[in-house]
Amino acid sequence: MHEYSIVQALLNQCEEIAQKNEVNKVAKITTKIGVMSGVEIHLFQVAFDTFKEGTVCDGAELIINEQNLKLHCNACGAEFETDEICYICKKCESLNVKVIDGEDMYLMSLEME
Image (cartoon, rainbow, N blue to C red):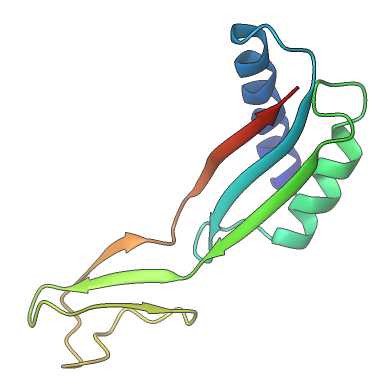
């Protein structure tokens, strides 16, 4: 289950940011997780709740914003979002599309005390 290692990396990143800002507690963590990132959101939440104890994130609220797949069609120029795993332009049905968003996970913000 790779969600555990992803959560550990997130907690390490939060720890580093907290140290740089000379704070001892993170109150809220906001993330953006793409539907094609390979991260199971439920398992990510469970792993976070398990591993945050004893860290600067102990007691922190985790906000997870799920990002749909956002595509740009190189054929007709259309941009669109879909929650389906489908790399076809919804306007012209071209397969010549470029992924703009939805394949990655990002730490968007931290609220520290």
